[in-house]
Image (cartoon, one colour):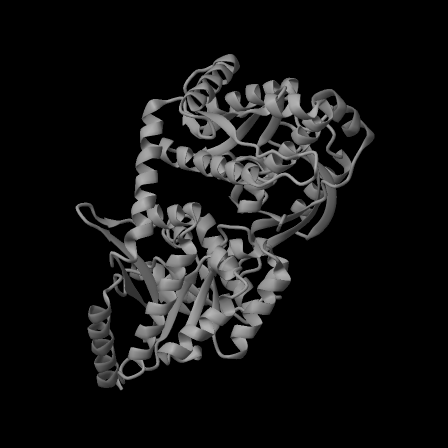
Length: 562
């Protein structure tokens, strides 16, 4: 797991206190429990607390004043006042005139350090058997979460879990077996949630999970809570090891989502408990949302998931191609984009069905189909003079990439279709870095040796750990369109784009910007050294035949200019 927290702030101004935050990465959100919306625009000392070393803080402020990089170690506090140790590398970002425009903080998690006071606190607020949070700690964190929701429009969730048929297993095997079973259940639950979430043993065979920052609209929050339930159900369904544990731990789960509307801790628990009993009444080993409107949305999403599983055999999927241009405004390639046309409803947006495919476990099947079709099209391009030089970019999900047979599957697709490996570029997201790095590195090197290229997609929005980039066989960094959109109006996005270009060039990589829609955006990106451009300024995504016509027109235009 990559744990480096990345935070970018404004430049420090005398008498202005600590500079304000303009960017944090996914690791920051995951380890601190704060959402991006909760921290952007706030002073960067929001993680400091009563036991943060004041001498170290003075050193950081002196470095801000002098414009010099500095290394420090200090005790910070995540949301809910949870302490954790970090090693901090702080460095300035400078403009072409050498003026400091922003500061970058890269923090390595050192939370493995222990303090005697933390051990004492652990005994007071944790369950003696399982080591999970006890009722006291859960109630305290619930109060804090409610207070945070009152200030920020984010949804959180309370999940009430009751083991089905535990009493029978406990009576049959005795309390020692029951305790062993509860220990195993606690361990499995901990593998299903984020560090910012809280798992508590509420009593007996009841567990409660407080889920932080599930999303900013009800549908998104419900989908994320449902995903956690499915992880839990899958883990508990696995047989327990050991002769004394002949038991499969099914569970009835109630889920209560809450946000900025007024509520009390007692109401949250009571509603989650009621939803759990609704799950038991429905036959056990299932879940229910307290809000029936939310349950309807989840049911509709489940229906859509079943339809997605059938989409390939029904030939409802297709690929569009969006052009990519170089600095001389020449067509150099395209990105293959998956489309789903649903009968009676038209095209389903990718930002809806791609996350759904990942959550229900069909993303690998979709990815395999996309790779095969893209290679077929790439081989067809080779026979068209205006297109033979083009590179095809294909998105690969982390689940697909980590499969042991992925490298062989790529080579098989290339061999079957006759597509050239050096015309194929695989786009990986930053979340691939949370996998086994040595496996990732070996797979990329094997493919790269045969000519296959790699781009790191959506750079700056995910799990990026800067020190790992130089270890990967990358060709390109891709600036996410969320930064490109406001690059002309938001100085922070402009600084982030400039930093990504500088970093990419320092590593010998090309930098591609997606979502380029205006000439002003293109000219700015050109001025900072961006190499490749993609977006509606050049072309919308096109079906295969339309893209072929587009490429031929571009080639004729290039010949006329020559």
